[in-house]
Length: 125
Image (cartoon, rainbow, N blue to C red):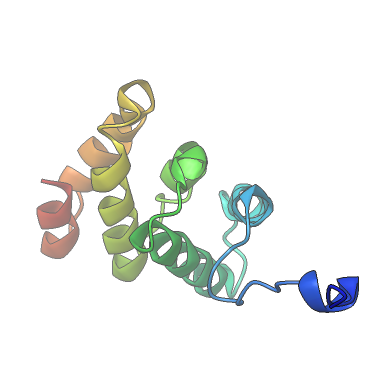
């Protein structure tokens, strides 16, 4: 009996859109976060939210997204409470793996502790 044709044995597996296939997706996220880091353009917070959601979802399913730590910290300079919550969730998870980079968070945590909004002050604590 002859073996099956190569086209049947080597099926191309296309990853699902919700799960990244490798480091390229994380690199893309890093680049996009870096572009939005200082942006105050209209709609920038919405774009940041979508990127933060992707980072948190990748983190939740076990993909290492620690390489975007500094970009997440740079994007934390916002008054959007939802972005702050997602950023603090990420920082809380990866700070133990990146103690040197975790020092970058001290400035924005101190700034948030002085914020007028009690929710932001509470999150920073």
